[in-house]
Image (cartoon, rainbow, N blue to C red; front, top):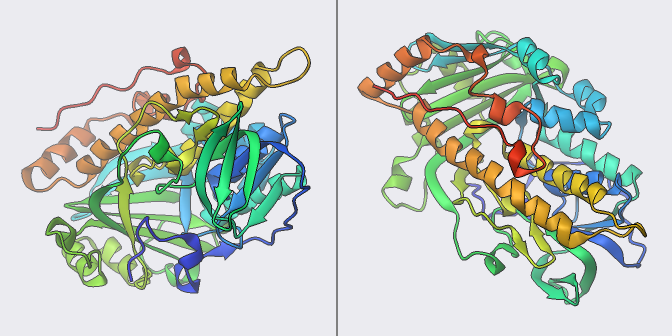
Length: 436
């Protein structure tokens, strides 16, 4: 069974490795300042950041339980910097892994292409590069939101958003409604709010991801390096490995282009396609493939960037605004940045009587976040193409990589540096290097 972006969390079973955190649900019944639709990492991190600025927040989640599906994720310095600001970095470190380096190898012959010292990354940006289980990061934000008094409601599916008299209203499947000064739609790639801003559809990349997180002893004999993030890039495929949960688990991701998807078939991304895609790859990859979960796969979609995320007092956040392909490892990070940036502008736009000038807050948010995320989405598509080159282009890429010095930082400063609050804070992007 495939698991594409159209499948909701509540439809997942244990085979998808969905992990939930115990939730103390409550609602005061009183009007709050901010409603957030979506109890994933983006929604809960926004709730955490906004309540730290003194706002009252209510989060609605369509699933009855708050949880996350998936396995490992990488969080670069632009994310750990925000975790530190929110007082959550130490907890994240205790649950995750701070690797020593990131290595990229050719998936066919295992030759090294790039090697980045992640300790130097921390020295340059002031915060570490980490890997962590998605459910652990989700749990960190959920617990923080609970401590800070965020109101949580599960089993509530939003079906409509409206602007009403300087506020916003959301309507749920059961016919009930709720209103607040602002409604934040953190409701994913199939956001109900997005069509009121732009008429578009998710874009299929024809690529599929398989995941697998297992006790590390099961992978110990597979020529792994638990101190590194390792990426093997190959023709139409790539393979990622790193340790999780203080080194007790080992995470792997196998991504490949589906011939069935390219041919327009509905049943695409199946295990036989994975086996064929990685045929001929190096021993390190071949040893890792048997540990992948073969009962679920994730079809990779994004959307074209949009430069407006607002409809009155309704604001998009996270994948509702900017669902990316995964190559930049910035998907969840962009969502965390969204909520943090909005919270910073709340702090800057309080009137003399303590009220929030929401028009100013949302205008500032909309001025800076879409452009940054446009850069990530666009670069992610190009980066994926670069990883998956075939034939002579693959060899030419490898030669270019041989001459790169990743510690010149020109490829990372614009991503891993401090999160911009204003358009003028965005650093210049890198200049692409021609291949061939």
